[in-house]
Length: 208
Ligand SMILES: Cc1cc2nc3c(=O)[nH]c(=O)nc-3n(C[C@H](O)[C@H](O)[C@H](O)COP(=O)(O)O)c2cc1C
Image (cartoon, helix red, strand yellow):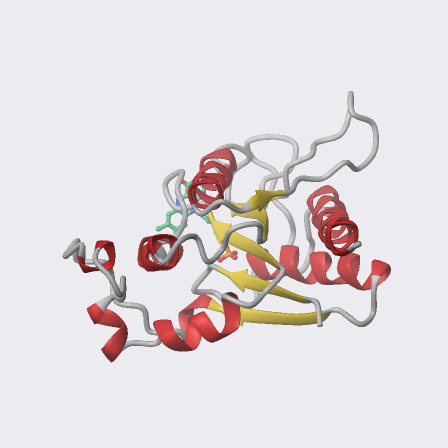
């Protein structure tokens, strides 16, 4: 069975990151109804920050911290997926602490000879102001590249006129204009939806 895992990297469970993921889910479903879709909230998992002990460098490449936190539970969700979609908030130009901890603690998966190799990764970001989301996307891309994953972007609309990175912002057209309560960044939603669609299409291609 094909499985896509979506990770909400914000401690706020139903805000902008969640909006992007929900749009991506719609995109996935528009291609295939039978894909297993599992959305998780990173804050539901107790993940201890890496302490740099380097024990994951030596066989059996396990992390001693995993004995006392939820990373094994997390492994059960993410290590057998075909694709991962991560939406992370922009905190000072980078991912949230929770996602950074997730990334750092994924090191044993690399040391066990690339357990995430060829898993598709679609990065997404939620940001307050218009700029800064690219830093988040870049953090997520680096994670994917270092883990040997396949990074997927979007191809929505005109290549000359449309944005193609799933970044949502609460800022509208000017410095003083922000989305009203309950309103969402429509373009980012469309991009997120198309990204979900692309993820499902790519899985189908790879499975052929
Ligand atoms: C600690 C912290 C730092 C932030 N830093 C920035 C920033 O540098 N630039 C920005 O545009 N928004 C910043 N924000 C705003 C968040 O990116 C924004 O609220 C985003 O929507 C959070 O995602 P969420 O709605 O899914 O929680 C910051 C928020 C917090 C809590």
